[in-house]
Amino acid sequence: MKAYNGNNVIKKQFSLVFVKFAVCFLLLGLAYRLFLSHFQHFSQIEVVNDAALFSDNTLPTPATVSESPVTLNEPPVTVSESPVNVDVSENQTLQNGKCDLFIGNWVHDPSGPVYTNATCYSIESHQNCMKNGRPDTEYLYWRWNPRDCELPRFSPKKFLNLMRNKSFTFIGDSIMRNHVQSLLCILSQEEQVDDVYHDEQYKSRRWYFPNLDFSLSVIWSPFLAKATVFEDDNGVTTDITQLHLDKLDDVWTQQFDSFDYVVIGGGKWYLKSTIYLENNTIVGCHNCPGKNITQVGFAYAYRKALNTTMKFITSSKNKAYTFFRTTTPDHFENGEWNTGGYCNRTGPFKGGEVDMGYVDEVMRKVELEEFERASEFGSNMKLFDTTLLSLLRPDGHPGVYRQYQPFAAENKNKVQNDCLHWCLPGPIDSWNDIMMQMLCH
Ligand SMILES: *[C@@H]1O[C@H](CO)[C@@H](O)[C@H](O)[C@H]1NC(C)=O
Ligand SMILES: *[C@@H]1O[C@H](CO)[C@@H](O)[C@H](O)[C@H]1NC(C)=O
Ligand SMILES: *[C@@H]1O[C@H](CO)[C@@H](O)[C@H](O)[C@H]1NC(C)=O
Ligand SMILES: *[C@@H]1O[C@H](CO)[C@@H](O)[C@H](O)[C@H]1NC(C)=O
Ligand SMILES: *[C@@H]1O[C@H](CO)[C@@H](O)[C@H](O)[C@H]1NC(C)=O
Ligand SMILES: *[C@@H]1O[C@H](CO)[C@@H](O)[C@H](O)[C@H]1NC(C)=O
Ligand SMILES: *[C@@H]1O[C@H](CO)[C@@H](O)[C@H](O)[C@H]1NC(C)=O
Image (cartoon, rainbow, N blue to C red; front, side, top):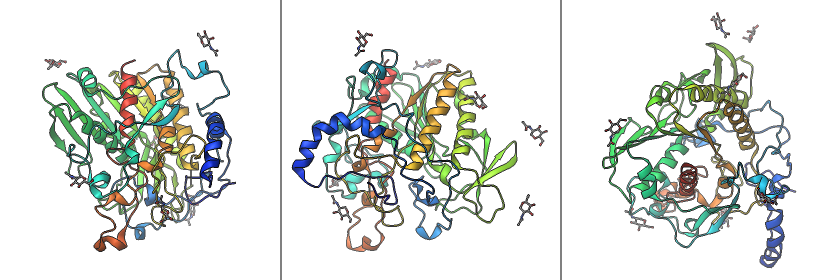
């Protein structure tokens, strides 16, 4: 039925337009059911290229990827725990009478983005698709539409009002930075903002809204847990990363008490070659040939680290309102980032047209389970489950437009695709609509 094309995007293509039309109505009804089907498409081995993660904007050159294919110890998972389910009555999707904001579809929205490359000056060059010459613009005219309720567009005024004298931070990897920049672009249309801090590599940053006494920041902590060997600017590690699964990265825990609102998440960096420690003792590794250390799957490590993270958050005396964001799917098609994979679609998928890749399935499963366990401790942690809605937006990535004028004569031979981060403006702007809605209820 479907070919594994080296990545996550598996589509059911209907070649004739009119067939598509006819099928459309059926599809609408079947969409979620299809989504639900227990596909077990990757039966034994998943090849994960370490550097393929785009975990940062700095893409290592393919030559630096020397790792051999990785065998995941975990059996294939099915998506039975997915909240997407149409077999149940409408009411069951409403949690405590509240609408599930993460089930729905993308609908056309002629109003378009509230900022552009010309009105927001803080867009990172790799995500500045407009400026870099992306020719199509359809991807800008969609908004997320939850099935069971209205989702108003993000209101900067309302948001900023809530944020008076508050501190809001994003903790995680480069997708967190992507998200904070989206928020910053929207807010800066409304209110003066000052750049008050950045680290050397502009990975951790802080902004301040002086009229409101509001601090917005992003903290670079791609593992959330404590790592002892890190890679340099070019994504090159001098040695394999060592990660303490039972200790957290001080960079965020030390500041945690000062935050009122937090968005936290991770995942992708757990696919890298890593040695895992607990209680300062090596307990295994992932993707570490030649090390004579037991291979344990990344899911084991991610689960442990999330447990440590959530233990910290739920037992902290600072009851910050915390969004726990689930994994972000990429959309490389017909290859990986370094084997010719690309993402040049110009419109969203409908539910059922795409199936989540194995790695993201595993990650989201771990995330949902650990979140569930942690919620027994009655915290202020809320699930920010953007995985499925993001999966429907293969059109929202920079692709080759991560670089300025990729097809200009002088750039011809070094065209590189980014099918993980999001264009700004782009679909990630909608994450703020949802965030706002959660804050207001
Ligand atoms: C949904 O819940 C409402 C009130 O709780 C009830 O009146 C209604 O019949 C339910 N609908 C279905 C389809 O179960
Ligand atoms: C914004 O992008 C357009 C192309 O879409 C380009 O012509 C313009 O110079 C860019 N503006 C800025 C300020 O980068
Ligand atoms: C912010 O809160 C602190 C104490 O929490 C208070 O001292 C300060 O005056 C407040 N600032 C504003 C602008 O409201
Ligand atoms: C951690 O290691 C120390 C010695 O290195 C040992 O005394 C202690 O029992 C260990 N703790 C746990 C929880 O395994
Ligand atoms: C691998 O580790 C085991 C247990 O620590 C040890 O007995 C064995 O000699 C090691 N093998 C090599 C090739 O180092
Ligand atoms: C972390 O894991 C331990 C051991 O499995 C469990 O007892 C505890 O409830 C978990 N804590 C959280 C916050 O999930
Ligand atoms: C996307 O790129 C592939 C490979 O370069 C090409 O065959 C295809 O026509 C492109 N699709 C669109 C919509 O541009």
